[in-house]
Image 1 (tube, one colour):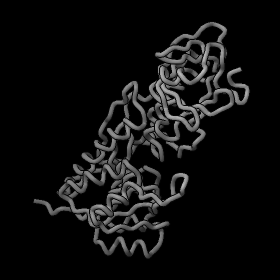
Image 2: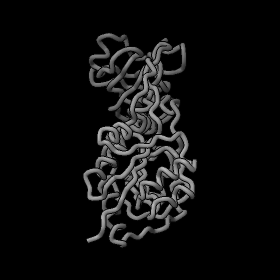
Image 3: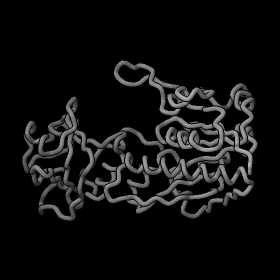
Image 4: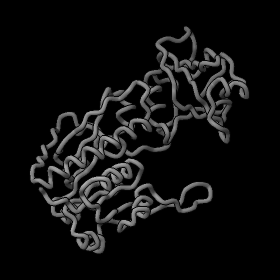
Length: 322
């Protein structure tokens, strides 16, 4: 029987924490954890533990949270753990060649896409926004490039028609934990083979900015449907109503047609099942809305406290609703 591998885990957000939990339930001991520094959050700017750092503390694991991973001091800390392999998932730092060489078997990355499609920082959101029918989880041997290393395995995952980044994230996290455990078993037996990625089909998912959630009703209803789902829960999608922020939450429905002459952003139908808004192509049925400082409400409840009627307009700044 092969000897279990000594694993150092590197990651920061929820997806990484889900992978770490799978590792902790597996046969390969996690001898150390590395995560980004905990940061202030919320109105009070109190320091909040990240999902991975909180789990590491809960399990009593050695934890490092360096502001930089490029220092000799950090490499020495890592080397002292005598890791066979590092498993990296949504870490948020780029690992240089010196660091990649510290573990005996190098560093293995859990990436939430079917590489080489959607390399980069936001593959889950990018896949939904692009209308991809499927994505996946790739387990990759890391090299100094941005998600360019050879791939051990890719597990395909279909994208449902009503999929949000939140629901797809949870499914990919579960698949990622299972897939990386299988690769570690193969590495322990000396049987793992990583295949170089093809250059053809490579795309990049860039870091998401908050304004990615701003809705432009001049776009097609299909594109806006994807945008609402891709950016839920963060950064969320929004428009304006009478000049005030209005969040649009899933579910939404893209309708193929809209009344002739309706301008993009114009409300064409109001009812308890949804508010239909004209788009550049088709119309978008909004089913859940939230005004600034208020709770998110289904449309039937929202309409009890808000005056919406056909002919009003969403978006377009301070003239909204006129």
